[in-house]
Image (tube, rainbow, N blue to C red; front, side, top):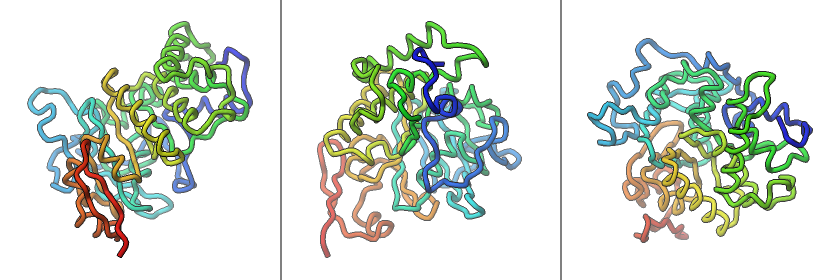
Length: 324
């Protein structure tokens, strides 16, 4: 599926149809679900949002009474890895076009919850994407609906930028078939949107961290999914590249009507870009709402065990650590 000939490891990378990248160490050993067996669902659980408690993260009035389902509807989400309960009873609705960021201390279950929403981990509870339960979406259909950008994507050796972005078109290529003119056009459009045309023939391992992150986003964009899940998209970037990547995501969200759910550690940056935030601790939702409602000194002191000062910024609250 490469215009340059098969690159080493490309066949393995192509198999990652439902997202971008591989599980990181936090998820090592987790069983990957098949397209038709994403996880066990209790009877009636597919009625996402029914009988929700206040512990979740709802969309408020977004879409209420209009008959339009949210882009993402999660109810009673529980995920076990190696028999250990990592995510415990998470509820989350995300309106179409909204940006929700999941925060929390290390080990809170952020990445695990994100991967379950993307259909990449077995779970209990209910997850619906654009009103369709994940359990009813075959792998290719799921990949056309949601794109997951992993925290540290595994890149096949010596792979060129164009070929990596082309992997995003896997859900549209028939078995044993080849990419179409529409697939090549989608790749070219994604490269242009992220200012990567000049890097199309470059090997990924020759790019800087910020440039690689743009390539990972380009693959997700070429995938054509309206829901994008970003796991720590700025974790390996300096402050300049962090801002560059997040501004790109926000611009693409506005231009293409994307729905974004991200996990982030930098609280101030997260609060500047997210419409709403959800704070996980011990696998449970302990706070949810607008950034100003979640990023308070009292909430952060309780769940991060840290002393901070929260300052009102132009785009959201700014969290400043303070020495005791």
